[in-house]
Image (cartoon, rainbow, N blue to C red; front, side, top):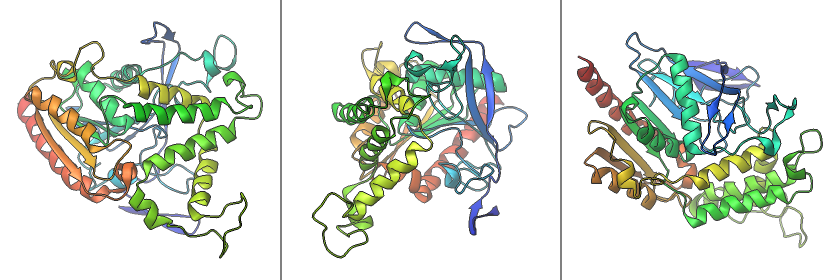
Length: 389
């Protein structure tokens, strides 16, 4: 592993300096009946693809993530969103495996989305960008794998929205997937999950700067997007973690101000999270991706989740991970996935990790995840080697 020094700080990253790459495609038919043309996908890779092209792993990001899963870009002050999970000796070991991570379509970090240029007008799409679904995201990723010459994945994995994509992958392209690791995820949103997303969307759309999504040449709806992020961020934490991090501590004062300035540390933290988010994320993308999450239902068109997984080959392996304090994607939703998998007789391991970090645990509880994922991948790789022999 190597140390990287940025602004006087030392970071340990076994991936090091990385660059985002871009793949261009002519078109992609969408669930809406429309066609997205042309299509750009931003992606990064880590590790080396072996001669058999059998060690590829697809990493799938959550709502606010992107293609930059690990390592540092030039000028970065911190590494990619899953850096402690990707690298030599880590859960996704770059000495053994080849990882691919792409920004989803509808995104704002290099892939085609509402903030990219509409070739028909020469201006950003805004709401003219077609509605996209999780299956659309997966079909776009398949184009990328074909571009890279990869016909079968050792595993597909991701947390939250990434777990939904992983489940969609194995139902849509079952012969391409040897194993699946959905983490802190679900087969469909509950009413509560939809409700939180709708509050965030309303915060954006009621910002006077939103202008029906056509704000790119004007002031952006930063206030609305910031509030949406604050709402979302509360759901990523847990009651216990908030007590530990903030308690009722006051911010820069010893007594309450009895006004509407920032009194509590937790208020300051949420405002900081909102301010940081608006510098790197697009408000329309927030609308599009949260709608894609709310639309997602693995059973759609099949009747039940068990039926949706009926065509998955019997030798496909599953590792389903949940976290005890996650109230946004609570363990019962992961258990519903496990029951459907076992209902089809599929090789399924369920791990519920005790954590106080809430939904964010999939990003920060790296040690416990690493232990179970490394073993799972080693067994899967051995089985794949026997299958090819």
